[in-house]
Each structure stands twice: as C-alpha cells, then as structure tokens.
Amino acid sequence: MSETFYGSDFEALAAFDPDIAGVLTGELGRLRGGLQLIASENFSSPEVLTALGSTLSNKYAEGYPGRRYYGGCAEVDVAEELAIERCKALFGADHANVQPHSGASANQAVYGAFLKPGETILAMSLPHGGHLTHGTKVSFSGKWFDAVHYGVDKETEDVDYDEVERLAREHRPKVILAGGSAIPRTIDFARFRAIADEVGAIFWVDAAHFIGLVAGKAIPSPVPYADVVSFTTHKVLRGPRSGAIVCTEEHRAAIDKAVFPMMQGGPQMHTIAAKAVNFKECATPEYAEYARQVVANAAVLAETLGEHGIRPTTGGTDTHLSLHDLQGVLVTGADAEARCDAAGITLNKNAIPFDPQKPNIASGIRVGTPCVTTQGMGEDEMRRVAALIARAVVDGDADPEHAVSREVRGAVTELVDAFPAYPRPARG
Ligand SMILES: *Cc1c(COP(=O)(O)O)cnc(C)c1O
Figure 1 (cartoon, rainbow, N blue to C red):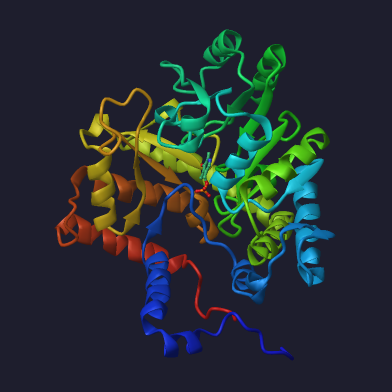
Figure 2: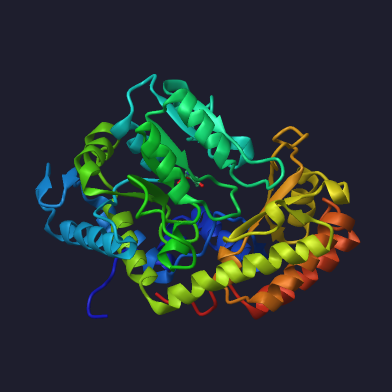
C-alpha cells in the first residue's frame, strides 16, 4: 500500500491500551475456539471489518447524499450512493434506506413512517417466534402502539394464517407485520399480501433473520409482496452490525423522513461503507453458494438432532435456523444452554410454541448455521455437530471439568481446528 491506512493498527492499540487489546484478542480466540451456533450471528469478512475501522467514523453527514446539513460530504456521499444502489439491485427494490443503526432502529422508523401512537399493528407474538419490537409490552412498540398478536398453529407449529386473517378482519390494523426471530419455515408472503389488501393495511416484513438467504436466492423474497421490508445486516447477510429498509417508490419519502430526522441523527458512515462492501459480496456466486449451503446444513442439523431425540418444531426447517423441543429428553433450555457452553458449543435457550416453562428457563434451544457454514463446514460436519450437541445436552453438565464436558470440548476443538473461523494469518 502506498499510503498508511489508519484504522487497523493493532500494535499501537495494544501498546496504548492492553486491557481493550486483550478483549479484542480474547474475543477472537473465543470465536475460533468453539462452535458458534447462535442463529443471529455470523463472521463478517476482513474487508467489511476494514471499512468499519476507518476514518469515515469521524464524519457528520446528517441528511442524504447530495442533501447534507454538513460540508465535506463528497467522499461519504459516494459510499452511501454505492450502498443504496447495491442494496436496491440485490433485492430488486424501488428504494433503499441504508442509514438505520440496527434492526430495532429500522423497525422504529417503520412505525414512525406509518403509524401514529395508539394505532393498531398485527404481528407475530414473541413467545411464538416474533420479536421484542413487534409490540411487546417492554418495548416502545407495545407501549406506544396497540399491538394485536397472532401465533402458530398447534398442529403444524407454523404461522397460523387463518388466525392472521381472522384477527385482521376483526381489528382492521393499520399495519400487518410478518417475520420474527424464531421462525424456521419460509413465510407465505402472498397470503399475507392478500390479507393486507382485504383490510387495507400496509404489509411490512421484518426480514432481519433471513434476508441473507433472500440475497443469496436460497429462499423466496418478500420484496415483490411487501410495502416495506426492514432488516439487519449482521445476521445471515454477514455484513456489519446495522440495519436497512427497502420499500416501494410510494413509501420512499415517508421512510426517509422517518429514519432521519424523525428517529436518528447523523448516519454512521463507516458502517454504511461496510454495508456497501457487504452488498457487493452478497451479489457474488460465492455468496449464493454460501446461502444455499447454510440452508442445506440447517436441514441436516435439525434432522440429526431429531434422530437424537431433540425434536425440531414444525418437523424441520427451510431456513438457517431450527427450534428444538427438549421435553423428550427431559432437559430444560437453560440447562441445555449451560451444558453446551461448558462443552465449547455456543447456542441459546429459546421458548417453543405453547412452552410450559417460563421464558428464562424455556423448553427449547435455537440453533443456526450461518457461522459454521462461513467456516466451511458442510452436511457431514452437521451430523457430527448434532451428535456433540446431543451428547452435551443429554449426558453433559454445566461444569466445564465434568468428563462429558471435556470429551465434547475435545471433539469440538478438533472440528474447529479443521474449519477455523478467521484463519491465521489474518490479513491487514
Ligand atoms: C435481530 C432482530 C431485530 C433487531 O435487530 P438489532 O440489530 O438487534 O436491533 C429485529 N427484528 C427481528 C425479527 C430480529 O431477528
């Protein structure tokens, strides 16, 4: 490189602040040292991380490209225009707003664009797989808006579309919201669109979890059906920790005004540049192959866990995640999480539909394949991972020194050494 690049001088940071340098290396060691099965996490590329660690973080750029409230925005305008154009092309959308700081911020803006306080939204309930920002009482969304919730069908354990239709007719919501954080199956967007049209509602999809699979064309896209789609950029998509919104031309002005100035101040231009890099990555054949493999891996992981007595809800998955009922092996979600943690496997306890346990105990676990697939693992490795999870959950212990914890941890180490996250030597 002909020019010093400021933003990735680890030696200088380590010399000045060994405490924080130690956290950075410790976290990298944690990522490399175990199996990361949290369905909402991924490992973004060194290129994305480089854009994040850049001097673009310094720039104030309130407003939008070409219409800023600050001078000196020529360079960052290029980054935001590229991010917008790449995002629109990736999803075939009329309009993209790439400024939301996170998934929750993107959702806040959608509420701001379409609803006044007290108006009604129809969304998936949290205990059945929705999200905090979909009208729960502890969130702004439940405090300021009137939220009506649908759930899953008791038999299929998948979205109860008849209930969506019934509640839409009864409550006439201003907005109908599809999506959530623990929905293993693809969503019938056409059915939602028809229900929204019948009652004159805006149809909003929160695609935070699965948008990466849409980008890689591994599952159907909500974009042709929805008025507005909000999402995070750091889950399967594999970009920086952030959010974005795409919408039809009709809603362009409402969305842009709701993101800024209604909900946010200055955009994070380093993160927007990193989103641009990520959108470019997502348009490659390699990324499409990655998305396809994420889904194939999730299907095998879910099926094999089922063979070990850890039943997948809905009978499996179409996406990157599965939700498992532990009642058959008589272990709680909290115990399963702790036992896996002691064995080098990071996953989360999760409520299952109609869960008899309290949410902080739960009867289920949620697992996802974005991270392990980024590491290069395939279906054979997923069978091995399922066996290790089952061993830890059924026979293991929360004590890392327990014989089963040690045994599983040894096997996990072998596996992650063969498929390293952030392989050495690191670039940059
Ligand atoms: C993760 C997620 C969000 C929130 O994203 P943050 O970046 O954590 O704010 C919103 N909606 C759904 C469905 C999610 O899964």
